[in-house]
Image (cartoon, rainbow, N blue to C red; front, side, top):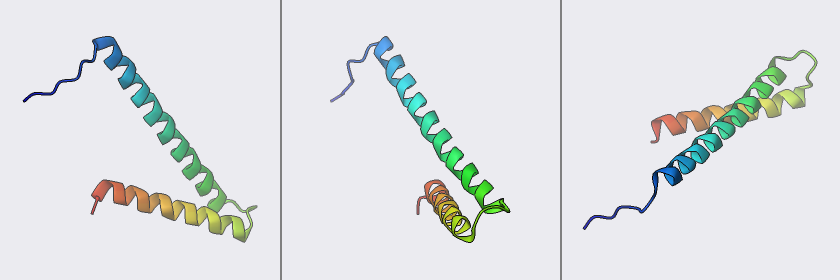
Length: 72
């Protein structure tokens, strides 16, 4: 038995464009948050509490990346 979707070439291109666009926007947003947290941690003007939450976010981002890449 073979199951093949009835998807036209134009529909496929639109779907792939939407998927890639959504992925790039999400990746850009995550990178922006990581950069913002890194700048907060290295800032002289940031308070201790601000640096604590920024380190928490950076730790969570690092754990997520490690978990994504190694998947164990």
